[in-house]
Amino acid sequence: MDNKIRLSEAEEIRLVKYLKEELGYTQRRISQAVKAVNRMDHSLKTELMKAIATGTIPVIVIEKLTVQDLMERLNMNMVTAFLAIDYLLREPEEAKYILARKKESNQR
Amino acid sequence: MGVVFRTIVSEIVEELVCEAILWLRELWDNRVKAPDSLLVANLSKTDRLKQKQTKQIIHGVLGEDPIQEILKMNAADRIHKMEEVFCRLVECYDLNVTADFYGDSRDSCGYFDGENNILSLNVADLLSKNPEYVKEFLDTMIHELRHAIQQKAIRTEGFWDIEETRRLEWRNNYDNYIEFEVDPQGYARQVVEEDALTFASGCLKGVY
Image (cartoon, rainbow over all chains, first blue to last red; front, side, top):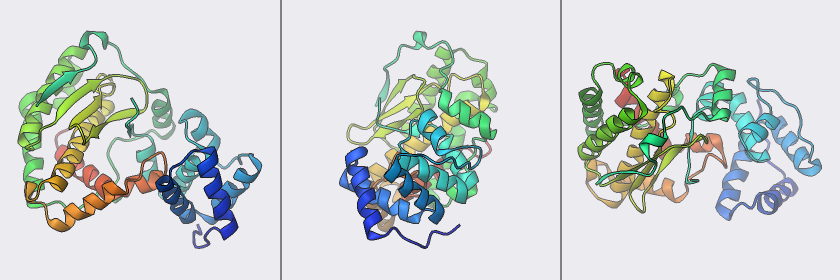
């Protein structure tokens, strides 16, 4: 796992645009998400940027789950689904506990 | 202080299953206990005393084997007993918090609304036939009460003898709170969540 290579300036601009325009993120959420994406495994980061550019979601299976599964079954947006896959890749036990636990939410 | 029943108890007589969570748990044969890597907050002497008192309250209301006791009850009795546990914990923790028990099958367990001091709790897990889900309800209730403690400590100097540095750390975290929906790992690893996970886990160690 390699997370030392950060997003290039151009990639970061594309990601911010996507988070703002496609996901409607606030400034605070954008900076948190960009920080999290920069922390991701490099190959996953590359796949995420490709998916943002093309709209095609790759089939990557980690702990029996794919990005598509997380989007369809758990209603995650694509960026969060990639972050969840990254969490499963680097800290599987911890990620499984967090993902399979009901969420604290203000949504009622 | 009191408990408000948003949902009429008699309406909740069957299990409320969240399909997405059920699917994940079956996929991974999941366990309810938090991994040690998330239980890293430093607890104070007061925290440990309150953890001990929490265990005593749970056993006092639900007996020596709380989960088995709950599993024998119908939905209304489960909610009434949990109301009693909640009221006693709120008194023990010196909080002025109202509970709002509701039930639905979505993947939300509830939340603490610090502005209005209302703790909303989804009773779906409490009504389950699965003991692991009932355990999770108890864990959630204490976890959310810990958030209420954190927020009172931020507002009230000296509350629970919590150190100034810790209060500041909590306040900074709430000002920059990371939601699960934005960054799952960032959410789990932030100070207030690690603290709530550690506190709740210690309260329930040995209870079931």
